[in-house]
Amino acid sequence: MPILTDNTNEIPIIKIQGELDIKTALSFKTEIINLILEGKFEIKSDLSELDHIDSAGIGVFLSTTLSLNKLGGSFTIINPQMHIKDLLDSTQVIKILNVEEV
Image (cartoon, rainbow, N blue to C red; front, top):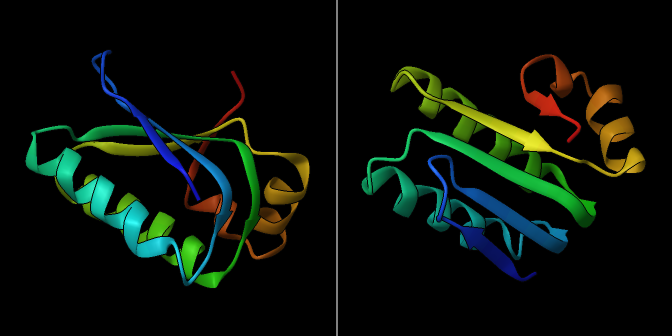
């Protein structure tokens, strides 16, 4: 799972490609932690090229959302593919996450 972070704008965007699962979730979480340590409390993640997510990946989304909310920031996922959005909807996680189509 390549993780590409565009940190050139005020709000960094992390693009995830391939899979976000138990094998790759730690890399994504580490990237989030590094951004928070840099003082970035508004973070977006582009899911347009995410093909698969499991409970570990969803868990990172939820913990990131809660952590950033406590810091007065926010975590937003953008451009999820339809099957990813359907999964988040069927698990009702979508009610907690900020989701944008851009």
